[in-house]
Length: 280
Length: 349
Image 1 (cartoon, rainbow over the protein chains, first blue to last red):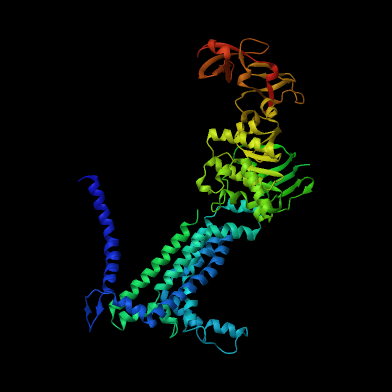
Image 2 (tube, each protein chain N blue to C red):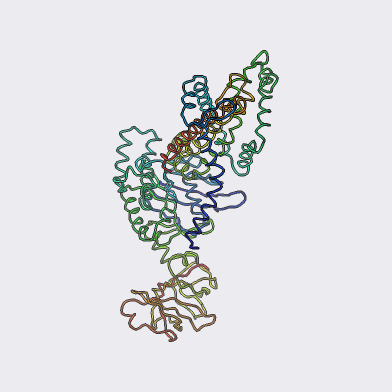
């Protein structure tokens, strides 16, 4: 057996795993989205009806746009919160720095469901947030505004996805050579100029990466809206879930999932373009 | 006037990396801090630049105490060892960074950038990014960025270390030309003796956080005061002995005549330093008998390695040039070696 054949064999052996477990399921899903659900059976006639229905019906298209908006909010807020935290950790010296970093990413090791329940109880009527606001006299009686609405989904998602945002930003900051900061100061720049003109642009790729994590994760999340979203926190993820679990219209669910996949891919490609325009 | 370091000490924790050190740099001078790694030369530069704080002592510039002044308010600019160019900015933006953050007006900034890029010969590369430049070009950008604001002192931290030998030669000449043109004080850090000798007005030789000797390149080469300096610049034959009188040193090779050296007690332990090129074959007022152990042909020079008969034997290094090369002795031959007493320098052991 020639070494060329061997190499191809090894390639196929390795490629088989992602092919079987990633490419085939997605392809079959895509195919499913072109079918139609009949009475308790799937009718295998290829058409784009599911997609047409989706965009023609404002209930679905509106939910989709609302979800996009929510995910963009999650992205922006987590970057606005995560960047200062990453920057603060980066400013620390020695072991304290890595201790803080570890603390920031520890939530990643905890169960998603546990985190959701914790946040639900914190945001609830007798939760920590209300208790604190009562204690400082900001409100007179416990407020319902923190739970079972779109805002609750936003807050919860930001808290849960924050580590995914902090980590890439921190890594990008840490990659900036100290000598560049020295050079900036040496040339007469103050702290703000150095941050704005050197640190921020050089940490942008990591920031975009972190933002992308938040956006894509939020887009695919249907459990958080279900747990804390109530009736107004309705997202496309929940709609898809209900198509599979309640309505038994798998082809329509698959079509919506495909739209979501394309949206995520578009986000990733946009972010990729933004990063590659940076000359580092 | 100029830059002055007065009894400056630097400690990291309990470790004293710089022992009390005083230094004067005249305005317009090209001063080199020379020493092996760990000698404290870069620390001195960082203290002057304001990137590290002195533990004791003071730094003055033109009579003013600038010890507590932060780096961005000192009238000095630095060329960093790894260039430290901003990767996301073009040559133009890198060079113009100083005027930009110092809020110079746009017209003046543009003129400064144009002039400076002209001086360093990078006008054609103004829109390139650092990643698209060669090592020598990056070096020029770093220099442009440092000189653009017309600082009073330019600090250079081994700026040529990353360049290959040919480029290094060119950059040495280039740096020297720039320095003459802009008439600015240069404080240059290097571990390369040749670089120091060819470029500097004055050299400060450092070792283990202390100044070994300060002087012009000629002083250091011909009149080294310590063993470290004698061994650091080029090759030197070092013969141990004790002072007999101000013009003679007792060694295992006999009583060797030396350049007059007053101020040392009789029997003080010293070294006689004689340059290989100061030794020649033949007899004279000072004669050393030795056996040729090896000859090396080096083009313009033939290098002879000799071993003296005296006990303990001493290895001598001698260079033959011109006519003498034709009659060079072969290995194994016995020869007499002599020198001018004025070329034999007494060095503290």
